[in-house]
Length: 621
Image (cartoon, rainbow, N blue to C red):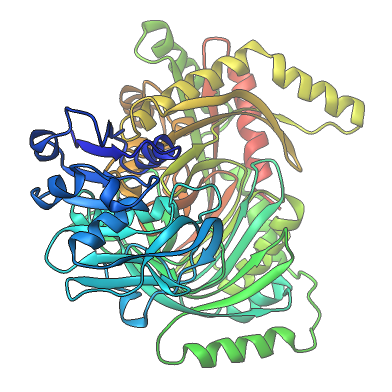
């Protein structure tokens, strides 16, 4: 296990810094005071990395620490006073300045340093200063990575593995402190190298009509439209729709997830949105089903602030696309009413009549699942079936169908993906994984009832969902399974369940859901997390491995994209992925939809059939 040493100068921020390091690396550093007799050459040599905390005074007040650092070959990150100790060891002069205690400032990163992997700060980053001395002039042993006002805020040494930050990354008003620590760990090899950064061009535009924007952009190339909710039961927080570039399909020679890891990237210079560029796509239930596109140009809409931006990777033609698209979106609007091809709509609405399993067959499979429960080979079996009908449709016709679907069944994770002969139209209410800077949240769903026709009936159904022991048992086993999945890659002790049971209400159904959280461990990334948690626990049952074997025996064919995960991945520590349910797929001239439910001891064959049909109808406009 990684061993980190944090040297404390009896400062009031040291434990906050230790906690910040734990959030990033999953290891809490050993904290030793600078005047602790046990802080010696052996303590320094026994660490993989060393952090010098901030503190009062000047480098001359730091006791033996400068000599210990000079005689040690370990990587060192100095903060505040620690920054000045390292600068002093590089020969720099530490000068008194007008005290800047609790001041907020913004960093300027020189142009040649912005994309250098040794630079661990970001241009324009808001930081908090708490110092009354500073380094104004570098020596030949120092590379200046950031300045503010008239002094050096960040540097790294030319000839030693030393990095210095004058500001306080752990302060409450410093933005991006976690990323500063992570960038240092990556620059030194304590963590794997960071994903590539690509410069983005962007311009703010008036809030567009998303239906119109989609019609303008859908074209023939890879296209995506994603909604994501700030909260699982609320409307969309952000929408992204745009154009893909490179497309990754399953290949016998290499796993799609390995490609996504190797080609991970995120943008710099775009709007302050959760998605900053990277990959958009879907991985199906079976290993050989996947579609991912590297995004090139898109519209980002913040629904809460009612603001929108056009964003593009910096490449030839990008600025022209921004200008042309801005003009097209602001031009007088044509009629934006939805017009769905009548034959296509009829084919979609006929899907429940084309199930792989008719009523009797599905009830019989529920009975077979019960046999496994009684035998103890499974505790919960998430049985599903598919409906399919052949029907040719153009991408434009499918977009109109999706627009109708959005109106009749709005959902927090609505999505439209189109590439070649594959189009996916999703009204998913379920968050599979949200990851923000390594902080993970999942909201598994188990238990579904329709909305009531009157407020009284609706409230009664909601109460039933909250109190039904059968539905609660379905959920609790999935919540525990998901906790187990996250514990495979999250930092020890970080997996939590802040809401084991809650009810979320949508346009057509009430759902019973739980909330599970965790913190990705040191060195773990999105791909590790996907491999640990996929397929989503709510789509398999428990225990996962044996139950998936049972499902392979019971179900009449592959699930395809249904039951998979759909959304975006940005870099290696940020993602938003939904579970592919309430979803229509048009693939190579065939329309399909999947639905199912969890079989537990209290399930009845007719009850499971009714629940499956309710869920299937929720996906159909």
